[in-house]
Amino acid sequence: MKYATWLLLSLFLSACADGLSQPSSIDLESMQTPMSLYNQILSYRDRDFIGYRQLLKGLKEKQVIFLGEQHDSWKTHEYQLKILSSLFHRDKRIAIAMEMFERDVQPVLDQYTEGDLAESRFLKKSRPWPNYQSDYRPLVEFARYHKLHVIAMNTPRWIARNVVQQGLKAIFNLSPTEKDYIAKHVDYQDSAYERYFMNAIPHSHPHMKGVKSGAYKKMMKHFTMASALKDGTMAESINLFLKDPQQTNHKILSINGRFHSDYGLAIPKRLKSRNPRVSMAIITFVPLPKGEKVKLKGYLTKPKIADFIVFTDDQKSYH
Image 1 (tube, one colour):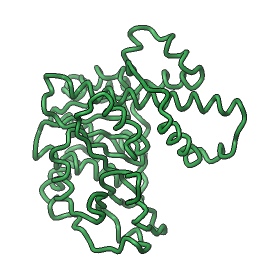
Image 2 (tube, one colour):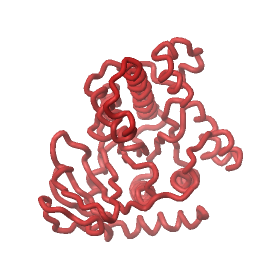
Image 3 (tube, helix red, strand yellow):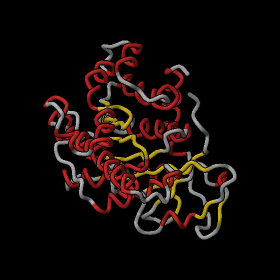
């Protein structure tokens, strides 16, 4: 799809935003069909559905907004563009932070968004994810068109891979230049984070469930370290932008997998430790397969999963 089409779509979505996603009166105690929930916004604070206008109002005073996604959900990415467009047309001081780009490609990303690099060269040098064209290109092109800053906030994957294999020894062996690509300070002893990470493993790697060998435990310790490094680096990347005197009063929209923002335990917690006064909001997108019924009360229990839950159609990306 040509970017001009996406741009027109974003402008249309912004203009029509207040008329979309109006709240419906659905019983939180009963099982709901997915189609009745598509594009509905569940507010944790209100314990009820809210409209899109109310969502934007809730985001107005927040410095950092986390958009926790399922990476292959096309409808989620469409909604992210809608939020970006809506916020931009209310206040142009906005930047995008993306898990999908790693710190060492920031100069390349800057060249491209500033219009100084051809897209073919950008794609060759920036190591985009396989689903970049279908899912993330519209966001980057929106930023390029409007001259917005895009933050490459993640740890280079080869560094994270070395931590998985070697543990913290891999960090000590980095050159001074390479150490600039990761957070200077990372809490590797956060027990709540470790439990959160370990609980996520059976869902993302079901074949590992029940494995208790010593080698497995060592490997999982290294996996947890690598994950903490990535989240610490992403938190630091956001905070460095917030602290930059040239970027005063900018809002940051963080595009990340929902693991990295759900319950506030990953990037948000590590950002808060660096910047206690930062104001944040967490939005989690939940794609719903057509045959899967949902009990909404589960999203309103403690601990809080997110400030807002947006339900979308489970339409997979094509790439």
